[in-house]
Amino acid sequence: MSSNQIALKNLVSMEHLTNEEVMALIKRGIEFKNGAKVHYDEQHIVANLFFESSTRTHKAFEVAELKLGCDLLDFDVKTSSVNKGETLYDTILTMSALGVDVCVIRHPEVDYYKELVESPTITTSIVNGGDGSGQHPSQSLLDLMTIYQEFGHFDGLKVAIAGDLDHSRVAKSNMQILKRLGAELFFAGPDEWRSAEFADYGKFVTIDEVIDQVDVMMFLRVQHERHDYNSIFSKENYHKLHGLTQERYDCMKDTAILMHPAPVNRDVEIADHLVEAPKSRIVEQMTNGVFVRMAIIEAVLKGRN
Ligand code: CP
Image 1 (cartoon, rainbow, N blue to C red):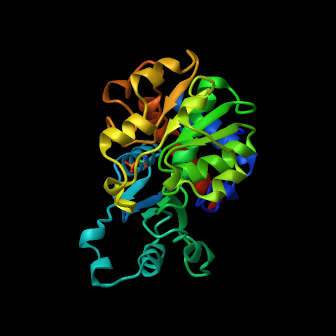
Image 2 (image 1 turned 90 degrees about the horizontal axis):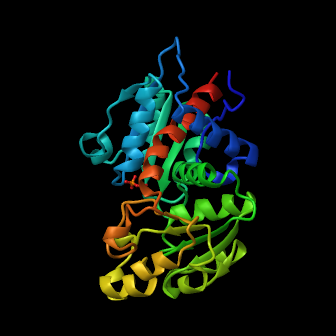
Image 3 (image 1 turned 30 degrees about the vertical axis):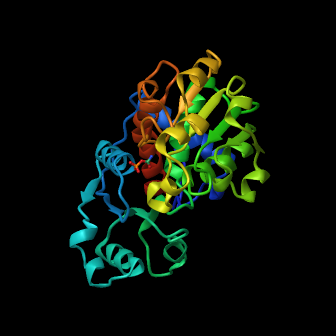
């Protein structure tokens, strides 16, 4: 058995994980990527409940669960009793009563998971697939796996996170854990989308002040669904002021990597032709998402024993 196989009751926020648990999940993700297999004698039923749109997180969890031999319970929010006013608590209570082992949930409400993990009646394990502008732990872990695969460490790495900081659960998950693992953080983007909480984790800069110094240049998606960005910027203006242009790409160190959680608003955060450029690890991030989610599901299944 690998020493990286840990046990977790739930996985809802990066702040609940120790550095050792984070490193074990990353290393277990790498083991899965390198071909490690698991076999369970008992049945495991997993339900993926997505109350907000998703391609990568939803489908990567499904692929991860299939690779682990789990049985997937179909749940379509549109045709469920959510339409009759069923609350999230009652939906998950039902899943628990039906014997579902793990519920992967994405929901627009920040901290939606608190009442679920505190409930004495709900026994299903909860994995957070994103809570509004709160946390996105599986994205954070796949980002960390991608950085670790590239550099082999986090200590002293210069990481810039640029864009729609306030509305980004990816930025919030990543800033906490990257600082804890020893990275030096810089934040760039429109003043309108920078709240004071970021100052506890790094320095506010303009993208042009740091683009030639950082090891990791991480852009964030402009979250159109959470604010009216068109009233502040035109697409062209945002790209020119805050996005990755060819000129900025050319300023990046040869060893630096470009990241984005995707979906990318092409020609807004990143010029269309640079999304798959040599320094980009955006496709790698998506691939790593399957393997790190295998590590997450394995850990919560182990936590149930
Ligand atoms: N990165 C991310 O969470 O993408 P999806 O919204 O497609 O899941």
